[in-house]
Each structure stands twice: as C-alpha cells, then as structure tokens.
Picture 1 (cartoon, one colour):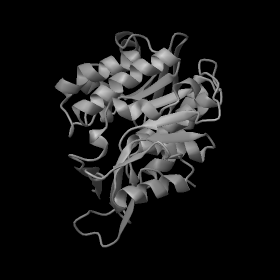
Picture 2: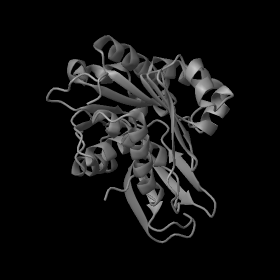
Picture 3: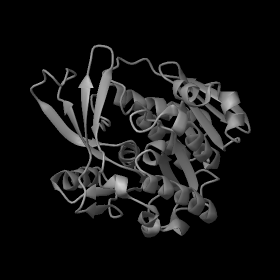
Length: 304
C-alpha cells in the first residue's frame, strides 16, 4: 500500500460511494430502436470502480441506497457475485432503483437516464454513519453524486470533512454529467471538491468545459496542488501531476466498441496501482490497461 495511505484493518481497503442503476443495453452494439436482445446489468461510476478493484483482488465495499424492488436486489446480487461488499447498502421502500439505457450509434453512444427521485438521490449525510472511518484507507467519490440532489451534495460535503479528520485518503473523479446540472452551476462546486481531494481524476475536455483549461500544469495549480492530479486525454493518454513533476503515459491502441465506463475503469486501474504501492507511471499504465477492457465492451465493466 502506498506510503500516504493508512494501513487497512479487517475492513475494506477502499470504499466507493455513489448511485448505481440498472443498466439496459443492447446485447450487440446496435441502436435501442431496432435491437431485439438486451442485457440487464449494474451501471454506475463508483460501483464500476468497485467491481474492477474487487476483480484485482482488493477488499472493496460499495455504499449506496437502492429501491426495495427487484432491480435493487438484482444489483446487489450482481455486485456481490463479483466480490464487492454491499453490506453498507440500504434499501428504500419509498423510492425506486434508477434505470438507464445505452443507445449505441455509429459514432457515439447516447445514454438515457431515468433516475429522478431514485432511492440513491434521497441519501444524505446520515448515510455515512455506517462507515468505520478509523479503519478506512481510501474513499472514492465522484461529482455525479453532487448533482443528484441537495441532500447528496450535503453528504459529499460531510464525506470530505470527515475523511480529512480521520486521515482517510479521498479519490475524486470530477465526472460532470450535463444531464444533471449545467457546467456553470457545477464548475465551482466540482472545483471546490477537487481542492479537498488527495487524488483527482478529470478529462481534459471536461476540464476545459468546466474551468476553461485542460492544461495539466495549470489545472494542478488552480485546484490547489492535490497529491496527484490525473488528466485523461482520451485516446492520446493520461498525465499525472504531483509535487515531484508530471508523468505522461500514452493510451493503448484499441478498437473501440463504446466509451461509456472507460473513465471509471481507468480510475480503478490507477487506484489498484496506488493500493499496491506503484509509482505514478505504473498506475497510469494500469489505468490504460483496465480502460482498454471497458472500451472493448458494451458494458460498463467487463471482467475477464
């Protein structure tokens, strides 16, 4: 485990917090309108990270809320089957599990969300009461959660403050979702969270939209010099910026089936390297390797 991560006890080495929905996708990369066969699986940024980390052998837990419904129970069963600890997930009898659909096209995949009023959107700071902060080395969050509801934003505020008080390292993926909130509204909020995080993941084009620049060095300074800023530049590669300088590792050449979920897979690969004590270049290489597997599939995760 890396030197700035505290030693894990008997609990998880990493906890991923955020909404997961039931994902409906055509079995083959064809449009929703004409597809005849579909696959129902789990889809969510933080749980995708958890799935890949568990697949790499790390003790991983996911904290969220699902509806007390068949889809919620299905999600729990699917994550449990891949080794993710779901004991911190609660079921809400008054709200449904969210759903989203992937619509593959010739040049891009469109995603349709049906998550308004979901069980996860009703989470608040009290959802964090189940966390054993003293024994938790790494907490992974994303900006998606902040866009779900005011109570979820308050939960993230509390998570950052409490993690810092207990010496828990926070990994934060900016993950701006325009369907949840505009760049004008999200930009300042997500920048504030990034300044509180130890590790920050952001896409170059995403950063340009939110903050006016995708330059890794400029971003590093404007975000308060986190321990590590990771700027992803699609098929070009990724750059890790820290107090010791910048490291760039090119992306793998891959025949892309679709890109949804690749950023989360990359984050999981990077964090896996962090947990095993790898240096930034090796972490970036692991991120690319895991992202390649996601890019080659219509699913958010594709464990082999």
